[in-house]
Image (cartoon, rainbow, N blue to C red):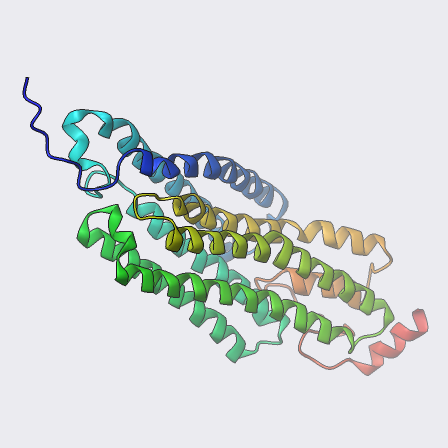
Length: 325
C-alpha cells in the first residue's frame, strides 16, 4: 500500500482545536442574540424601519458567521482527518473561515456606528466627535479586511502570523478599542454635563440615564469587549504560530458587539417604566427618557420640555418645574 502523501503545509489538527472551542463559545452567544432580537421585535413595534433593519441585518450576519464557522471546523477537524485530505488542513480554498472573519469586522463597525448615532444625539450633534468615532471604526474595518485579504492570497491560515498581518491586526484592534473607549466616555461626559443644566425633577431623570449609560456602555459593552480584544491581541502575539488560541476570542467579538446593541435597545422600556413609576410621569423627565433612548432620532421634539440635549433650559417651564417640586 502506497503511503506517499504530501506533508501538510499548514498547522496540525491539534493546533486548530481552538476553532472548535470557538464554536462552543459562540453558540450560546448566538442563542442570546436570537432571544434578544425576538424580544426587541415584540416590544418595539413602533421603532422606525431603519432601526428594525439594523437589528435584522445584525442577526442575519451573526447567523451566517455561526454557520460558516461551523463548516470550517467540520472541514478542518473532521474531513481533513482522512489521509486523502491532509494537504487541505489549514488551507482556505475548501474552508469558509474568511467569511466569519470578514463578518466579525463588519459587525464591529456596524455596532460602533450605532453607538456613534447615540453619541450624536446625546452630545447635541457634535460633528467632530462622531467623525472621530466613525473614523476609528473605519480604520478597524480596513485593518481587519486587509488582514483577511492577505491570508486569502496566501491561502493558508498560518499567514495570520505574517509581519504584514501583525501590523494590520494591531492597528485594527487598537483603533477598535480606542473607539469603544471614546463612545463610553462621551455618553458619560455629556449626560453628566447635562445634569447641571436642569432642575431637580429632571435631574433625577438624568441620574438614571447616566447610571444606565455606565451599565450599558461599560458593564455590558466596554469591559467585556476590551477584555476579549486584549486577550485576542495577547494570544495572537505571544502564542507560537502553531497554535490558534486567538480564534476563541476573535470570533466571539462580533456576537458580543451585537448583544450589547440589543441589550441597549431592549432596556429602553424598562427604564421608562421605572422612571415614570418614580414620579416623572410628565414634563422633562419623561421626555428626557424618550429623547435619549429613542436613539434613532424619531422621537417628536417637545417644544415645552424643560430639557433638550445640547440646548439651554427653557426658563418658563423651569419655573413651573420648581413650583411643582
